[in-house]
Image (tube, rainbow, N blue to C red; front, side, top):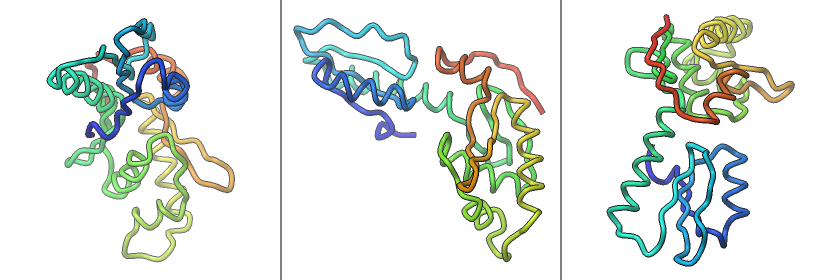
Length: 180
């Protein structure tokens, strides 16, 4: 994750842009005009700094936001574990390939064709095997608060489960528990 994943917004001049980014769950650093009141949002994906600001302070705020985003988004590590909010599940090699595609497109629709190409890079269309692996992946990820609903005629989406979504929108998790 880099600072390019954090939008820098002039506040209050671009308040509408900030609201749209917030609605999409995107991280943003609000650059508050000297005479403006600061924002009062409790969104963990939002930080603000008053201008003029020392470049070191801006970099520090960006680092805070990048760290929060990284903690909120799932990741697949080199040991084929999917990590999410200090919890993890072990994945088979095929599940890990599928999960990587879903993680790269977190909360976005991924077409089954893209999943098949990444899950079985050297094979023809996997047929029912894709559905079987998605079912297993759904079961595993449900244990750590993620779900993979189908979007009819379009694909699937990796997203926080209903309860997890309410919690993560409020604040980053500090749970610390692990799950297999």
